[in-house]
Length: 151
Image (cartoon, rainbow, N blue to C red):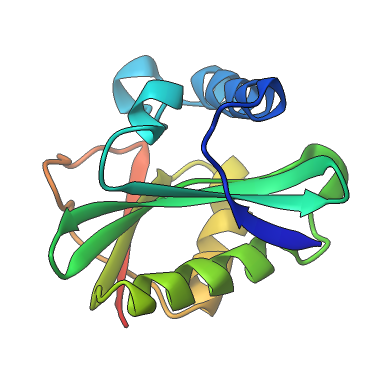
């Protein structure tokens, strides 16, 4: 497997991300869905990575610059067929290292508070993220959990 910066131009990544957005819409009320679509992920200040197993996308994730020292983890996803195979840990480790390399001193994220998101919250806890107040324009939301860590 390899992790590559993705320019988001392939139909495969568009399909992979569309499945992510559709799944989030099926679980979370629309007003509480914060997953970025393709256009949002193409914005300046966003770096997006795909995890490739050969020619197959098996995971993805991004960071969005909030300010000179603070970035947000976005669009973490592992393909359904490859869940619990270590891809998310590999990718999150990569994202943390890249965020440090880019000069960020803090990483934060928003994820769901429902039981479906428990594995994600446990992953983030394992990597040193702690629960925090909403950040960067987010508002308190019973469907959201906010987490942060210093780098």
